[in-house]
Amino acid sequence: MDGRERKNIMSGKRVSIVLKEDQRTGKLTEGIVRDILTKSPNHPHGIKVRLMSGEVGRVKEVF
Picture (cartoon, rainbow, N blue to C red):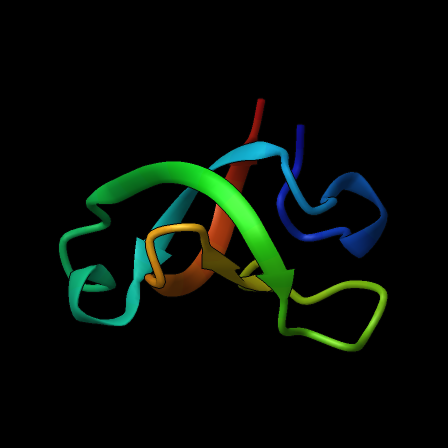
């Protein structure tokens, strides 16, 4: 599922995100969503979330 639409993302869902420091390489980090940080219904680079591990990044894929 697409990570650019806020409606696709909920707390507790498993997602792949790109961390700020990995934006150049595009390395994905997988985890469970704790908080949704983007307020708008969509974002061209992906909705920003905080994972249960505390890592923050933009969602690229929702499982």
